[in-house]
Length: 272
Image (cartoon, rainbow, N blue to C red; front, side):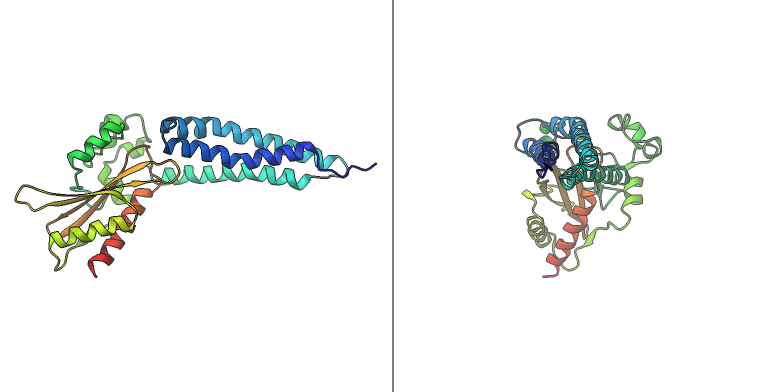
């Protein structure tokens, strides 16, 4: 009698493919909620084990596809094909992420590379307690900075942070205050930060006569809960922005994109 049921191996491959998103979601959300450190969630569960998990599912799905195509009545081949497409699609996505990381090799971006906004002591303490990346020295070539000595290629390390930011993000510019006072502008910046979803927004006014106002906030990614520190400096009739990741080498362009968005929202707030 001719077989009409879908083969067990096709069902198995399909089920394993459906579990892949669950595996990666657990790795990411477990990091976010503190079940394990980010090095475990990103580096081990996804970076190391994730490759084997994807490869294992792909192998099972490929074998199942071959078997279903060879054996009559060739029932269940679509299940196997879909199961194979899932890990292959994830591999393609990871390749795209790798390419994006290569195009955005740093994690500290500012609209003022000559004199980037400096974080307050409270923010630097929070970064230190977290074990975050060091805040970059914009003038020194990366090769001369200990943290970068074993990171990045030689072409990258030959440049200063300021050079890299200018080359990668030439369109990032400060905002002018116009007729607004610094105090009024700081309120607009606070509103803009909240508009784009930053938390822990604080304002610090310099006790010196320079009249500098710093507005700081924290951005957090949805999946891993990675935190980036954002500083906005209001001084000398301008508003400068800086965004720095706490973990990772590349930020995948997130900090530059955040500054562009925050700058646009702040500009809209200033015109109200």
